[in-house]
Each structure stands twice: as structure tokens, then as C-alpha cells.
Image (cartoon, rainbow, N blue to C red):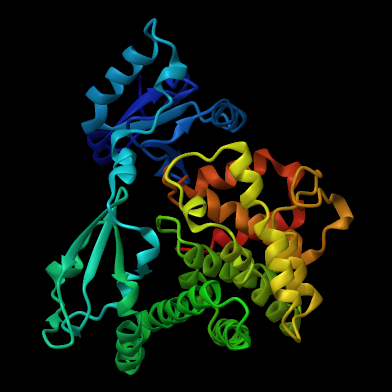
Length: 419
């Protein structure tokens, strides 16, 4: 195929025809396309290329797509294999990298996911660091209070997510407190990013505590304090919002997902012109929107294969369980409860648990529905790799009957400002 790439990109990428991609197969390489004059990621390696994905490409007339030149041989083997006499349906299996999840001897709930940006170069850590890449968890840095380890640039050049053992969370909290001043006094150019990192880390710790102690009034109070800290920071410096909205791909953890949903919902509320009080109520509801999962068996929440229909029916109950929990706490607003109980409802009526439609869904519920769906799409799951932001947004647009069109536009415009 011919290509209109510049000389540098032409060396790195190779043009292919989108019609060569076979629905029902998993893509063996990353797929790119031209967007705004730049090469942009479209599908990540391991993504199932569905009929919906094909429709999105054809609707947007994305015919010119690209692969890395280094992936040429692997892509050609995929095309030859997918067009062989073997049924494509047999190829829709979890790729080897994701099969490692099944073999992992570690329990995900034994670890807490942290942001690498919270680790200060040249500082000493008194806790072990683990890495999780393609589901395989390994000890990366061995440290203790008695034998702390100084972080070097080499140690921080870690591939994959960074985890700590749950038993080391108190030490991590102290580490964050100790280095908060140091982190906040760095150059103004990166101060907003540092503030955003600290806000998210503290919020994740709060949500994890809420999942462990959902009946505690203290965790509800702490959740409110975290939401207000985020809102105050964003009103003080709008750049913080765009640092809070992190588009890096993480493995799924309920507390990380909850903070992501709350942050983007707060941004949506502010951009939609909601009052400070309403944004706060929306933020509390979305930060705690999955608190009902504390009542669902964690083995099912963290299952490493695609769940069955009967298992999905059990997981769906987290909405009603969460609603009960919030209603049991004094002072929780209607808007906060609405964001929780309606975050899986769709304007088309195809959502759950009540099958609400149209105006039956509140404004907080409409916002939560968009943001929850988006973050779920861009998050790695044991049974699927993350979608790229472009593909995730395209999927929401393809299913636009499910979402408020004005709010979806606001959401897309907000994400467009994220660098």
C-alpha cells in the first residue's frame, strides 16, 4: 500500500488495509492510524477485533491504518492464519501473555497498587516493591524499616504496575506524609502533577479502607474530605484536573477505578457548570459508587476469566448493596446515592438494575454512567487488554443511544484537553 507518512514515520510504521483485519480474532500487534497529522494508537495488541470495531472503523472511514515495521512478519502470519480453513472463532482465545494471570500464585487482594510518580528519586523506602506486568507479580525491590533501600533511576524504570503488600500500607502512608513537603516544593512546572499524584494516592487509600470497612462513619467522612480536597485543588488550579485524569493503562483494581471515575465525574460536573455543592455530592457518590462490591465475593470480582451469565447476575447486585450502605449512613445526599445507584443505567433502558430510561435517570447518574463505562474500557482486565482512549470514545459514540449526548460531548471535550 502507498503511505503519506513523513520520512521518519515511514521508517517506523507500515501501512496496511483495514479490510485485512478479521472480525472474531485477537490482534497480534498494536494498530495505529493518522489523527490530527500524527500517528495515534487505535487498537492495542490482544484486543478482540469485533464486528463493532469494524463498524467504527468504516463509519469513521479509517481505511489507512498502520503497524510498526518491526511487526510486519507477525502481522503477515496473522493474516495468513486468520484466512485459513480453520474457524476464526477458535482463535478468539486469551493470548499467552494473559494466560499468565491464571498461573499467578499471588492473590491480587494481598497487594495495593501505587503510582510510580509518588516515589521520590533518591529517597529511601522501608517497604518492598512488586511489579505486575501481564498479570505476573514479581518482587522488584526488597526493603524494610531496618534495611531501607534508596531509590535510583534504574530501580524506578519499572515496567508494568507497581504494587506494595497490604501489610506495608501504613509505611506507605508515612512515606507520603514525609515526602509531601518535598514533592510540593519542586519546580512550578511539575507542581500540578505532584499535587494530582498525592490527591489520587490518598483517595485510593481511602476507597480501599471504605471497601474493607463499608459501615464505618469515619471512612464516609474521609471520602468527603478527599473529594473536597480534589475539588478545592481543581478550582485553585485547573491544570491539576488534567493531571488527575490519567490515561495510562492500569490493571483493574476497584479503588483505582473508583478514584478515576470520581475525578472524571468531578471534572464533568465543573465543565457542565454545576454548583460547587452539587459537584461535591457527585464526587462523593462516584468515589463510593462501587462500595457495594464489598458485599460480593472477591474471588468473583477478581476472576481471571470471562464471567458467566449467572456470575454476572451476582456481580450486578453490588449496585443495590451499595445503595443500602450509603442509605445507612447519616447525611448522604440524594445526588450521591443517585450517582451510585444509576451508574449502570442507560438512557436506552438497557442498563441495570432497574432498567431506567430517559428522564428517569438523574444528572449525577448520567454523568456516572458515561465515566464508569469509559474507565472500564481503558482499564486492563484479566480477560481483555485495555482499549485505547480513541477506541473507547468511539465505542461510546457507537452506543450513543445509551448516553446523554450533551454530556458525552462535554466529556470528549474535557478529555481533549488532557496532554
